[in-house]
Image (cartoon, rainbow, N blue to C red; front, side, top):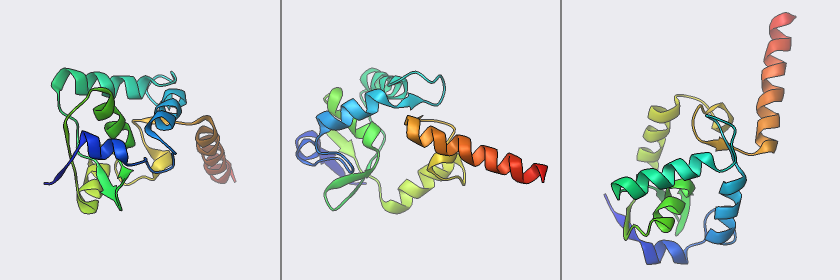
Length: 133
């Protein structure tokens, strides 16, 4: 397994954000799927990394984090000097292990934005409505 250094990670902008500072603000506003509290999932991950000194692998493509923005942010906040990388295949395997064969909105762990939550709610209503027909 390969790795990326903290300094290399800091030089890369996260996917979907202009900077890691912007990404941190975005993560602080996301609602935890376990309790609905803003930023709770990221705080739990930060604490795990802080207590163990290890961060689970992230997947990078073209020099940017493609999967693992929460993990990368935890590594940055906890000053983990070397962050392990995973391949696209390993990333997919981890997703199936952690969430099962569901899409992003079907996850049972992690966090979600308010707009994503409206899609989950709409999808659930459409399924229910279809079952009632």
